[in-house]
Image 1 (spheres, rainbow, N blue to C red):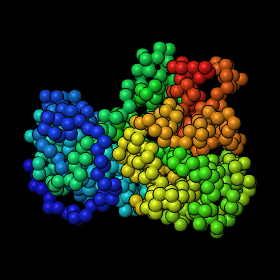
Image 2 (image 1 turned 180 degrees about the vertical axis):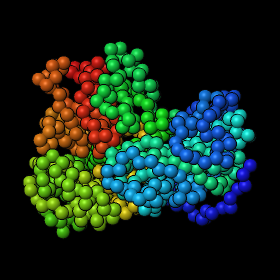
Image 3 (image 1 turned 90 degrees about the vertical axis):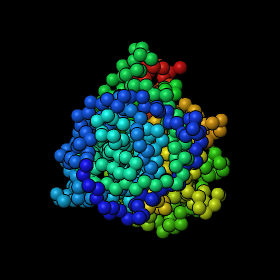
Image 4 (image 1 turned 135 degrees about the vertical axis):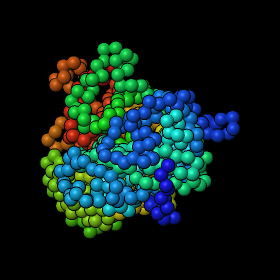
Length: 601
């Protein structure tokens, strides 16, 4: 057995940032009163034929490159863990350890051979264990203070293998997120442990949703384990059990062909490049047909907890939903609020904001812009807004545009307008509900929690100033998993904004967003045949263009940078994919969904 290194860890970890331990809503309990998570107990014999990440490799070895990602997964013959892990795990030597292999770097972010972007940020995480489930105390985006990377740590697993010399084994998913951006790079970590010590920690990153920066990163680092009682441990366990139990019923994607004869599942993704496809699936009648979650080294070990960036799908799933929630709480007057009454900086803008309402900004129709061409400003001058981190810098960049049209008459895509709308909603909420109110927390508590989104999604969003106390960006910056994504689509498309017997979203605004109000279809999007209404896009399908249909119908959808689509079809089918290769053509998925249920009644 190798000697243990002395602790080099400061008493206060960077990852103490985050939310308090969640309050349990429901959970199973065993005979002893302990929380039981679905899937426990493990019933394997422990006879695992392991060839990668063996006990000897984790105790004494090193890493020369990535291994198959399934080496981090719970094997079929995994047995119940012998030990209980509770306390703080801290990695050592992150700034210098590990390897890096560039796959794509359009902006030369990686730079020189010794660039710090090629290494992990400092990582120190508190965990509790519930049966075979390893639960981090802080989930969701954590602001580390690192100049390059923020961090997300998700729930993992613990188990026993006969070949591990009496130690227990654990693994968990993690993501590093480009600071001030939504680029998300997914990986896994694993280690052996007893009641008082841990082996070295092996990690690798082999997958991302990030158009401009793609790489593999790997390493094996010394680690420090400080066993201790974690505050709120029982609540964490109960909340995790409830989260796992409340996931949508799920089936493999290929099961579509069995449940709905005549459907060709491959048609849904026929236009997408497999190696750039992070996740995909179909939701129909409450069943989530989930595709595989691919990496460059096989299937990801933690598909259910893989963090997916929203990019501009947040314009719908956060900003538009926030407007609908405010209107449901306080009346339609909330959507008609003038931005200037809630964002004082507008008084010093280059353009005219005197008559711009919240709904105008959510609709990308403020009338203040440089170019009316499709994505004209977004692809050029908007970089100043996207790349600056401070609140004041973002406000200054958002207010540079002159008045070109009357509000509500001209669609021009501006992520900065969604930011201003989000800021206005935040300040409006504070006037109505109290000075400490936060519009993201409102959405997380009053919409995401009732529809049972994961703790990692509800915990945090991207904010200005690289701070948990910054202003929510609004137009991008959510980090969700596939189950979360499907549940948001279900709320909007299937459930008419209702959950748990309560109307969460204003039905009129939602009907407009979902193209169910013939009197309000929204605005046309420049030179392309799309509509935009209440933060939601829509594509029109006509019999003239597609003879297989006998009616004209519209498909509302969310869209995100790099190649992300959530198409919520009028027949009740939702198709989503998360990719990073600028692939946007998904008409064949609409046609395939027509086989499941006709779009025209």
